Length: 309
Image 1: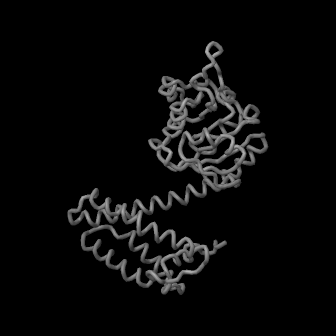
Image 2 (image 1 turned 90 degrees about the vertical axis):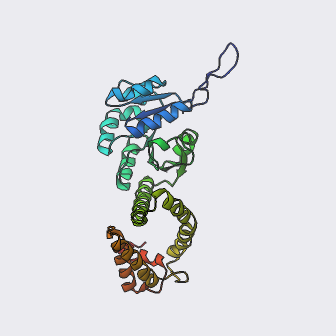
C-alpha cells in the first residue's frame, strides 16, 4: 500500500498530505465527482479520470491530478475506486488495464445486481485484483457525512487495509466476503426507501386535502417513524427470524379493517388509492393463507412465496 509520508528534511515537519493514502477515482458523474471531492477535502492525493475530460476541470482546480488515460490513473494509486454507468462501462475501462491493476485494490461503486458483483469478483481474482463491491447509501451531497452509510462486501483484507480512507466518504460497513451482499442490501434498502416515500406522499396528499401543510404533517410523521414504527420493526424482525407471529399487538384482521378507514378518507378527498388498495390486497392474501390472527409480520409469508430459506 502506498502512503504519502513525506518529511521536510529541513525542519522535520510532515508534509500536508502525510499519512493520506493516494486514491484514484475513475468516473466523474455526479457521484464519482463527489467521491473525489471528499478525498481532496481530507487531504488525500487524488487522481481522477473520466471519458469526458471536461468533467475533471473543477476537481483539477481543487488539486486533483487529471490522468490522460485509464492506465495512468490506475498506476497513480494502490486504491482505485470506480463509479461508472454500469458494468459494461466498467469492463470497457478496466479490461485493457487489467495487468496494471494487478496487486491493487479496486472498490467498485458502480450500481448493479448481486450477480454482477459476484461475476466481477471472478474477473478480479483472475487478474490478481483485490475486490470490494460498494453501495453508496446517499446522494452526492451526502458524501463525506459520517452519518451516511457506505456498504462494502468482498475482500475483508482490502476493507481493513483501506478502512481509514473509506471513512472519508461516510460510515463504512463491511457486510462479509460475498461480494454480492452490498448490492443485495442496496436493492432492499432502496425498496424500503421508495415504499416509505410513497406512503408519506400519500399521507401528505390526504391531510393536504384538508389544508394541512406538508411540513406540519411531516414533523409528526418523522416522530411516528422514529418512535412507534421503529419499535414495530425491531419487534417484528425477531418474529420473522423465528417464524412465529403472535398477534398480541394488532392482528392482520384488525389491520384489514383499519386500512378501510384510510381508503374511504382518501376516496372522499379524491386522493389516489392505488397504494392502500395494494396493501389491503396483500393483507387479505395473508389472511387467506391462515394468518388473520397473526401479527402484521406474517405478511412476509406471502411475500416470500417459494423463496423461504
